[in-house]
Length: 116
Image 1 (cartoon, rainbow, N blue to C red):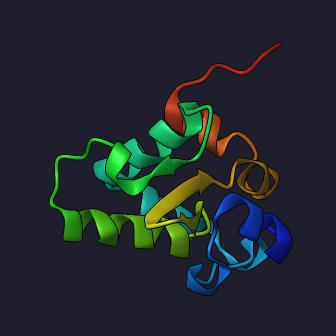
Image 2: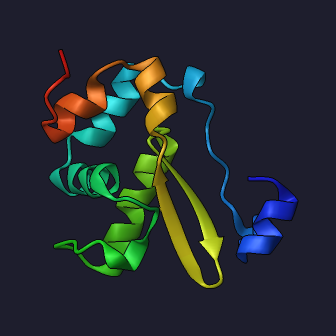
């Protein structure tokens, strides 16, 4: 997101956490991030969402600090991108980037059959 686009949308770029480049992430790190059912639930929700989701809008069976940890692990594994809109931390699945690096992984994870 450019600085101008961020200002128009209300996104604060000074609070956007660092995100790894997908080519620097190994399959091992991605799989370790996805081994936890809470993190798989987050990825599934983001996969099926028509828009980016705020952390609090995903119903998770854990407390706020534990949820924060799970989002952090997913971000460090390159699976999600986080940014702020006002006071809400938004989450976007890095679908295109992950699909390019690990073809079919996300589809298999969320149970979406491949198209013939």
